[in-house]
Image: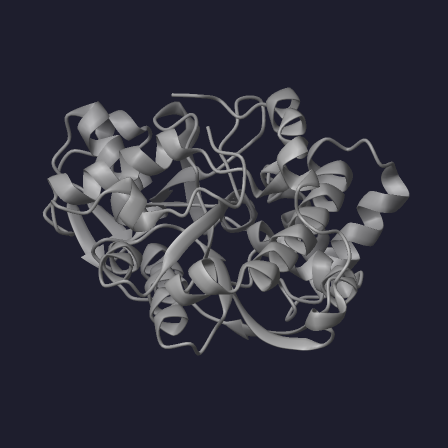
Length: 337
């Protein structure tokens, strides 16, 4: 697989330069709804909104928040959301096969040297011996739905460890957290701002890193309706441009930490408007900082990882075997690797 390193990602900025940096008169105040999760990993959209990048691109954005990836894909297909950022799911791929959705860029990525998604054990399972991924055989692994990114990650980890696991669908991240705390499920994998917060509070135990099994994983992608991808070029370019600017600010402040401590503090305060809003800033800030994984420069897309995901969905009979990369991805918008 190709690794999107910081140097490589910066090199891809040439692709972002082809996107318009300012909105055209034709896009003035174009209304759009952007789907998101209340995760640090969705920060590029939040930054683009809060710092006026969407507005400068001629876009009047409002957010629609979800609790899982598959409902977001359905919202794109039904036009309840115009653009969204989340993991590839079986639902998204099936909607692409029906001509309703397209992946147009990349967002969150696992990258060597940057602390990424964690593999967790419930306290009960940990006390019973689940102290490393090597011990996952026979365990219950949580996921939102069959065909979710959690299903993909868990299956890849299980295959590497030659483990047979029971996958338990719990629909929402909140329900999974409750099941982990109560010991109804044994294991899970999740982004670091959630994983570290749960482990730090004594609710679960961290037993491994997803990057050890999927080192170049394109965790989330940017996607839209097939109609937007095919016929709304200016609007789609404008969205990706603003999103890429937000990603640049986020990476500089919290991933590469090249913007200085004041910029990092400002970034955490900005993200706190959307993530861990039920906590005081002082308690939310460490978890937000812990969740800082790379968001690809220029919304570059790691198609090697996307292809691996598509192949897995096919191998599990979760999507039709006839679906191709061209069915799922419109590669004309951003740099691909």
